[in-house]
Image 1: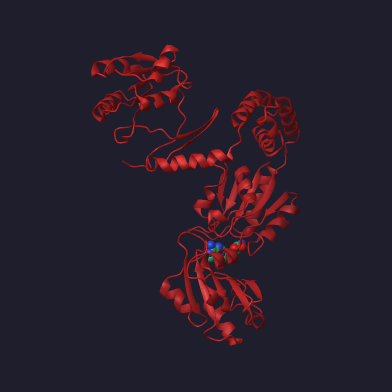
Image 2: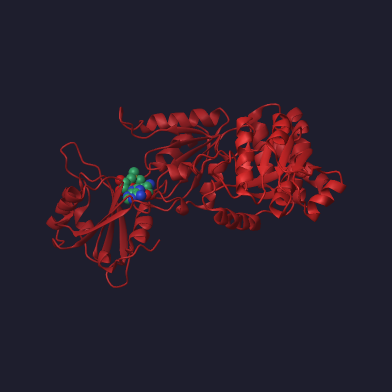
Length: 463
Ligand SMILES: C[S@@+](CC[C@H](N)C(=O)[O-])C[C@H]1O[C@@H](n2cnc3c(N)ncnc32)[C@H](O)[C@@H]1O
């Protein structure tokens, strides 16, 4: 049994009949799940508890007081939509499941996932809002723990808010027939004070707020330059997450791992603009043009950038191009690779005893292969260098620092895929960097920290 192979769906039961086999406490729990969702509930059991009797007396369920014989099940199964096998007899439950499966009726055997074709998730019920948490049967206790945690985050009036939104759908569709501004108006409403009114049941006030959102729903697009941090999703800012949830399209490159892209709104269009096997990175001018085109078409286009957009991220160029084209730009900073890698590798970037400043440095090889940097200012004691660059020029970088006065045993660390689950930290010196890269098979992205702070490294990761 593969506990990954479960698809969470919301099953419509308002025209259905469901069967519960069993009359004890567990069967009653499953019946309770169906009450209010499914109009016809049949219970087959010889012994019934008080709750079941009570629902029967209230006309909410039908009961056949009998064992679940094959003949009885065969007679009812063809018209059933769902079956719960919830007796305390495993063999009976399995027989019910066998027959249900033969009739292709979804069946859940309580506490026995093997013969089941569905399982029930942990449910947060704020109808019409329902949140289902499934671990595919792997860890029900974890599912219940998550339910408790999520419950505490949700406002009480959530169901009322959803009902308010349903009631306004016709009105807003008539007033904003185009999908994009309509979506925008709903999002602005949800971001604004109208939500509090709807949650509190103040319908008139909420309606006024929605009307204001509809009136002001911007018809023009925008561009958002958002820092995604060095790769660990825990290092996204709240601002980044919020915009990732509101964007119409997202342009990203190879510095953005799947675990972060997973947090982008599901129906946002994702556009990869990074290096591909068949071609180099899209030229910057084409990325700018793509953002401008989308923003002018009314989209909220989000450029998701590794680390911070304004630190070696070409965010400055993108902002200038967008602004020149008349597009509104917002910038959300991110945790830059140096901060993230330092923390994750346990290396402070400054230290009272040895480093009073920290220089973020990058460099590109000139046509003749040399690096054009201010070496005398970089090759100083009392400071840390955080080197953002590919691995190829690193040997030359270290060589230049030595040529300008730093000793060969000056500490250096390479942090490979910093902050991610597969992070590796390599400790060396200026004279061993090149050898390290080769023998350890280090790959990009990798950040190099050079300076005596490396000696203050904690062995354990601090994140
Ligand atoms: C084009 S720069 C982008 C820097 C980014 N804007 C920032 O603030 O971190 C790319 C370089 O950042 C460094 N880098 C980015 N993410 C990293 C990570 N998770 N681990 C190590 N280095 C990283 C590498 O040196 C890489 O070559």
